[in-house]
Image 1 (tube, rainbow, N blue to C red):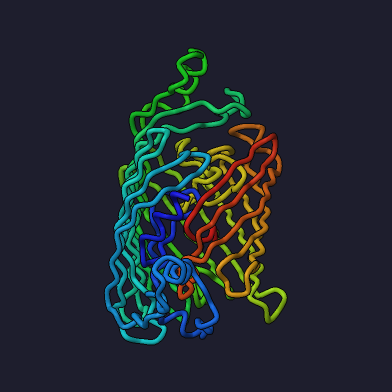
Image 2: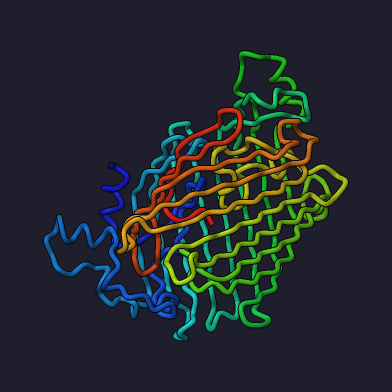
Length: 413
């Protein structure tokens, strides 16, 4: 109820990724995208309509005003989130959205920052910018994050129990910068620079000196990766906030080099493919599929905390039903499907059914050397009928008794 009351204080629908406590401000009302879908908003309802009808006793809500002509949209939002990794977390976020051009298909640019503090004494400060230049000719993506992040690890090259979590404290800094240029319609090629550093790595499970020694030996006290990135993107979705149709394909190759300051030379590839369709045809229900594959392609081992791992994709979204970092390996294969359906005809209340499976190479822990499935159910509450942004409450179940609630603003994929 506290979470809902906090959200009711805002007029913009903002997106909190599934296990990410940073705000993704793509959920600003994107009139230029949604007008291409041309829904009948007079029949749609969201939380603002309920607020004004039952609390403010007004006939018209801010959601029904035609504010699409505003060039800049700004908001400040306090919120409360929850994941298995962070527990309850308090968030204060500032977001800015604007259009760089006047074309009908001009994508919205966004800049956001926030401060998060969790019940597990984790601090997270992201700065995320997704800038689309005039006529979408360039997409400039900046992702900068600082974290102070006590969290659990499971298994170190067979030296620790893969079914028991050990708490490790560390600080981290991430700087990812990419520039993509449109080469044909909806198709982009780009280049970037990625820098990731972890320091002050130390075990907190002081009750077991043997485990502490293993963690100290295998992890060390710091990790650093620095390298260039090549990127291919195809995205023909009309609405990236609540996709109902189309394809998204994002493939990136990262080459870390000691010449750029990396502690070792190693490479990785990520392939993120998503597709959406109405099912049954003609309904507003959506059947979606997501494939996320993450490989380390070099013989040199990448730093442990930068290996492919559950919930450590850029948006921290993989593996509902498991805690972040539950499985880790040199290579990751991930599949997920979700069926999104309406409970109320006006779109205010919806539901989802989801299932996923993840598989990792076996050189880190034998627990990951098998398919690990997850599944669950969720409820959706429409925050903004124009953008499609939802408040999401999911309950996920994994193998070996893993389970928990996941509260998010915005879809997982």
